[in-house]
Length: 89
Image (cartoon, rainbow, N blue to C red; front, side, top):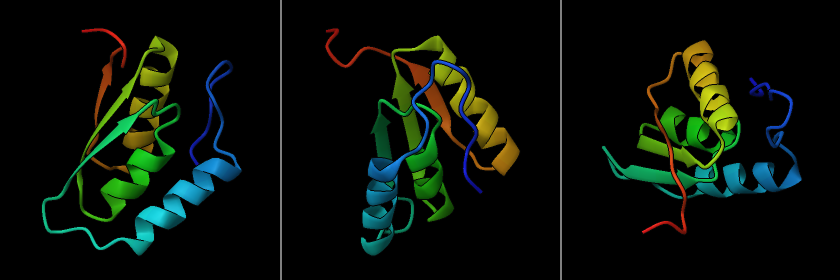
C-alpha cells in the first residue's frame, strides 16, 4: 500500500523506493529501533514498522507529521511520529 501524500508533503518517489528496498535487504534484530528523519508521508517508517522495528518518525512540517500519523493509522502500524528540527539543539 503506497501512503497517500497531503498537498505540500513530499510524495514517495524513486528515492523512497530505494530506501525501502535497502531497508528490506538488511536484517533487523528483534525490537530494532529505527529513526526516520524527514519522514514526509512516513513511507520509509512504515516499511520499517512492517519489518517489526520500533519506529520514531520525525519531520519539521506539521502537515507531514499529520500525514505520517494518518498513514500509520490506515496501515494499522505503530509509529511514534514527532515534529522536530534536525538542526535545533
